[in-house]
Image (cartoon, helix red, strand yellow):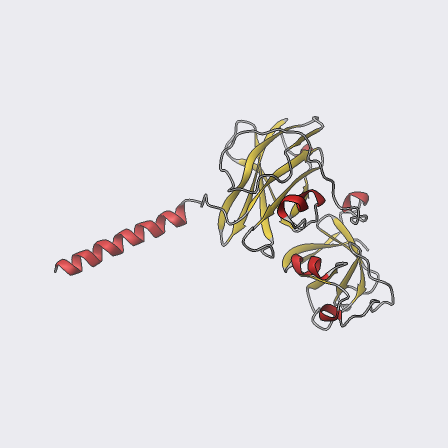
Length: 275
């Protein structure tokens, strides 16, 4: 009888602990990162998993009106953009994110922004909350240097602009185009290069053109014919290649090195057709 009672109590305790994990969001994040800049058109930052740099982070941004507890806007972005300013501290620059925001559609003038990485249904805070006011030039935080455990504090933190700049390779960004594009839905995105392992050492694409980073992609030509231009994140790409494994809603982004292609991993992103 005593043993049965002990088993029942043990089961009850374990059930209670499990319930707590389900109800309350985790504070110990598998990822590190923060918002580094907020301006009149976008919110930027970085997120990475120091235990697995191929673990591309899904970031969710919540925008609050100042003094309010309920978000007025949710934004989703993948932290897979290259930032040169991250290389010195993270040894890998492919963990940045930037997402557009239209402040004019939001009522009020003063806002607080929080960023979270989402993993297995759990939300983990990325850095501190950042404030922004309509009409102000820019709010920013230092880029890297904060690779320690993420904090859940809501302290508003305004600092000088991050020293680095985005890679000069990103010559075709969506900001250079006024076209929003037609959504083609969510695609499975991976990376490749022209090495033996990725493409058999071919130095030219199926279209006969030399592939270029931040420009060339391989796609299923029955869905996206050669020459199609699409926007993925903030970059505009041109379909110039195909692959035996690239069928259906899949896209392969060309990188100028195998390490960069491998670092991309596999992500799921919305693709917009420009023309």
